Amino acid sequence: MPTVTINSRIYRTRSVPVVGICLDGTSPSHLEAARHRMPRLTHLIRHGSSGLANAVIPSFTNPNNVAIVTGVPPNQNGICGNYYYDRLRDCEVMMDDPAYLRCPTILAGFRSLGYAAAAITAKDKLRRLLGEGLEGTCCSIERPGELSMQGRCLNVQDLVGRKAPGIYDPEISLYCIEAGVRLIGKTHVDLLYLSTTDYVQHKFAPDSAEAIDFYAKLDDFIGALDEAGAIVGITADHGMNDKTAENGAPNVRFLESGLQGNGMNEARVILPITDPHVVHHGALGSYATVYLDRRHVREAREALEELDGVEVVLSRREAARWFDLPPESIGDLIVLSGKNTVLGRTPGWHDLSCVGQGLRSHGGLHERTVPFIANRKLSSEYSGRLEAGEANNYDLFDFLLNGVED
Image (tube, rainbow, N blue to C red; front, side, top):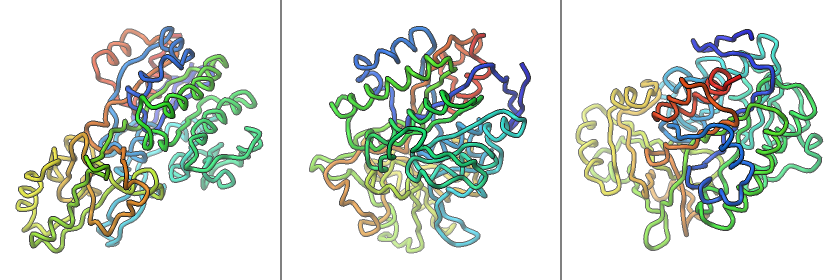
């Protein structure tokens, strides 16, 4: 079969559809808790391959989805958060504009050579990033009538046969995967990327009835893709952990308030988890980036390292090296909190009305380990990488296109 080179990686083309799925917010414990209700996934794993992979840090939606569809980490693709501070423009902005992308996506690379590629995302904030250069089907379930800048029109509601659910409806993720099943059945697709949303994972623990019911319903659509003859791969952008204090409120440390209260009045804390979906997390995650005058960097680092609930504090250079981040797009300090703690700016900056009595969130090292599953056997080289813990979630299409045995 011919090959396609994208971002210095060589990908084989396949004679059957290849479907990559990002189950947003799915930790290994979610699938384990629901396994007794997921017979099709169990069958897929038994006859295919499974293991664990590393997500990108920060373990948020945009950097991980973009890493998966480009096959490279943020220092190469440019996307290091959902939200960031643009020093040159002196403004805080959402990182959802394709102008921030520094390299093409695998989908666009395949499409440029005449292959049929498509992307369907539950969250509209990913639509333009996934659709950049695609010139093929790219739509979101959140806003089904809108297209990527270069995307082709797809009436996803006609495709599925019913109205699309809202972004805070657990059904929206099921609708997204069902749309992929319908698309595969209706038209020729060589490469398809499906990305869900993590409302269920934010609101319900893995062993809850609500979470298990969700994955049980999802199981049917995963099985349908497998039965359609597609090569199917499943991973996640991040896991999820409980971040609730003993009183039921979010277990949060307000970094900007603390630093400014200690005389560092210029301190600016950016929370790259920030996005329009405040019901999910209230803009509280386990990763923050801090901007300071140079004279205060050491003092701030020492103060943050002493803060209960803070696990790691890194300089810009250290964070860029450890996590493959673009140094010019992150702060002077990077802060990661512990498993059950989140980081905030100031109490007044956050709307906590939707998470005031319980919070599950992500962003740090404790949400980095994600499932990595293929419905086919892998070659010895690729199965060895998976077993050795050397797989990243952004290796998904490499494994599906190059690693799956013929």
